[in-house]
Amino acid sequence: MKVTLDELQTFATVVDTGSITAAAEQLEQTVSGASRTLARLEEKLQTTLLRRTTRRLELTEEGKAFLQNAREIIDAVENAEEQLAARRERPSGRLRVDAATPFMLHVIVPLVAGYRERYPQVELELNSNEGIIDLLERRTDVAIRIGRLKDSTLHSRPVGSSRIRVLATPAYLKAHGLPKRVEDLERHSLLGFTQPEALNVWPLVGADNEPYRINPSIASSSGETLRQLALESAGIVCLSDFMTGRDRREGKLVQLFARQTQDVRQPINAVYYRNTAISARIASFVDYLAEAAKTTEFAR
Image (cartoon, rainbow, N blue to C red):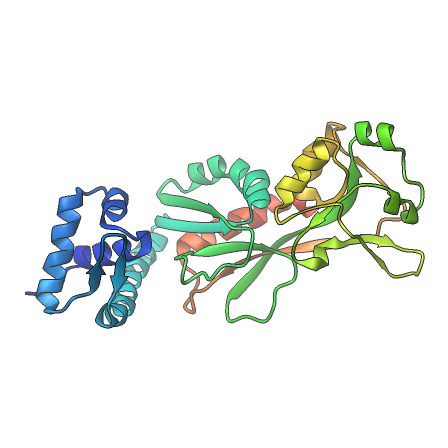
């Protein structure tokens, strides 16, 4: 008896989700049905793919080897479906997108309705991670990365750039005074990043004629957390335009050192792991994002 695509998909989904129950929910099956499908696959292969303990499922060595082949078969079928859909100019299928929380909230989420209207057959799955992820491990189709890319085997496409500025609330400045010189910042509460350290170099020149590096009074790994702290008048922050444009327009945050601020822009790239031609659904999303970049805050 031959192995079916449904059996391969069930096996891969169980591995990805970590449990038969979660896999059944994602596949819209009953738990008993998913369990029977997995058991049937192991019976056909006459081997154990997963060890079941009271707490988790663990791949056997045979399961690890078979999983790689199963993923290749599933991807091949998905690619075949995408190619047919592309011929009809209707990208389809699930598209897994990863981006840092601020970019997801301030850029991608506002674009979802328009994208879905144009490409209704694409099923979006949006995930947020503050750090660099392994696209293959997380089963991610395309990730949005902000900042300079390191050497990588990933394919990338620039979709825009975003200027960074030093900002504070009027309430904070009223309470603590307006810093007139860059050196005055040392007497203020400065909001910065725990990592990467490069984000704590602000687009200003210090007294030593070097780029101004801060020692944060409050640090966070999340730009959105720093934005919220700044809006609560907890200190002075340096953030990208894509997440502070509305705050500046509404007067909630005001720019400091406008004349002294260097025009430093963070590059924004879409990266994807496929080593074949870019799939129709990935291309549709990246094209839509790049098109939006021409008219939205983060590209100015």
